Image (tube, rainbow, N blue to C red; front, side):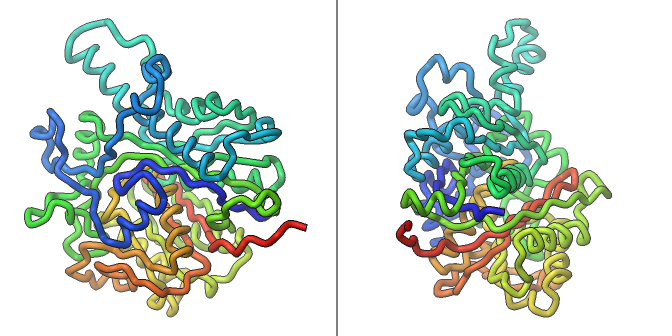
Length: 416
């Protein structure tokens, strides 16, 4: 396997639209969770969201904009930013061997909602002509390839909340085996349409509003946790062989070391300790590292009753007595749950944590849960922490558990 470097990061997220802005917001514990301002908000039990201030018209010309759902707009802009960050604007000689790997759980949610409103709500047959093209799950990946004439594999993964972690892991495999010379990998999600929010509400997985502070409504690993808050956005990475990145003097944000992918195969929504532990062990094995080398973990940490206690037990199963000494961060308390894009955003935050030697906090953890008794870095970032190697966990409805093993960047060395 060739080593694989992360040379570009592109973001549109509730915490900000650049890597440093997002990291500083997380380190300074600025929550992006808020009361949802929308015409339908009064019809929601708990109108909460983590949204992105974004107008696609500022980035995309009108003919293209008409064919794009919000999720596709997010994806294109984030991918463009990642390529710019990687200093790969020209892509000379790479297009035939460059792939796009995108995860999304809900696809074109707003487009579907608009179509159903026209058809059923207005009793009209005048569906927009681009409804299929904007709403299909593979539209974001397809448009990224079209935008940059990338002719390698163009793949979309829809494994619910692990979608973008799977996309990054699958891209890593192709690059590591020498099948590709470049990949854009990550996720995009825009699930804040009325129909989507009502559907999630019906599952009883969304957080109730914290009356004292709505921005503190998501409380991962706390005894009084009540669920997750949905967010939107996109996070894209540029991945390329380590040696190629060194040769061209590219910025290196970190390294993808390995990838574990395991299916619970037990229940469509109920997580399992065995499945989550197996995914972490698989990531360690693929990275050819020992559990003792893991310095920190970015937890899936949704704030739901079921997930947080199961994830705690799974970490203990993998790391044994040492589990209590590993900082575990659950950043969804600040940026919300981006569903199919969550794994990519949290991968970025893990890379930045290592670069800045900082364990990011798990916020709103005022009431400890006896069943969740690890070091969650409660309520404040912890600086000066030597973090060389991390795991980033992504677990999903449907049982697809994906874990990325990541390593901090090394100083660039002159090419020979």
